[in-house]
Image (cartoon, rainbow, N blue to C red; front, side):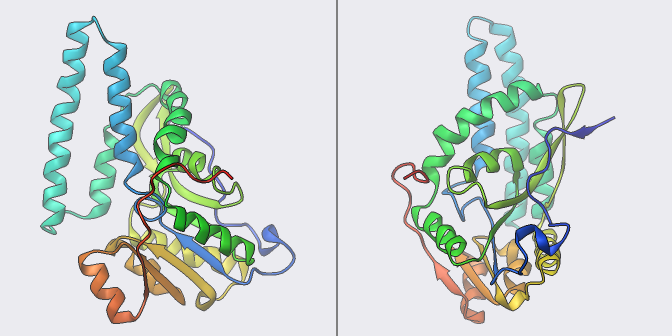
Length: 264
């Protein structure tokens, strides 16, 4: 029977007392990829895994050929799907599901064993310093931050712990069978999912949505942005830029990080 490969991180609180006897002054919901960090952590980790496996197979010609034979067709197919998405012929949720299928059969222990070093070496340096400060300022003002992402929850958790371990996280949890990943996940896969989670989280804590913030870089998160009283578009492009201007939302363009941040 398939089961989640890791325990879920902080999710929707069971009752408002979880954050204290009083409801918070507000809540802050954030996307992760291209909002808190520069880039997309999932594909970066996939490439990291591929390079690690290729190095492990040095001197094993046919094994390396099988590795290329598995991943080149998958990467080509994902490139095609991405092209169709840009033409509005594929849903973003379908692309995300397809990308996770590439992990089918991967040894779970090795996968999670490599994640710690990858997070520290490759993703923490990609944190936007300005977004790190934004989260810290909200936390200090009594507005808990909640990251809602279609990314891998265990990976994102390791990165957020470098900023503030108290930041809550709701992401995709990988499923496994017989100690190998199945390519299936449990968690938010689309903007509507994020908006529903946001609404449930705020209701559980008794916080009006008018007192909530939301940060995202992608138009697919428009439902999440539209649900709150304070929406912020981060490095928006195309449709999100136009929507942000139309709604009068704040637009934030943090500078590209030059070095790792998150630890004083």
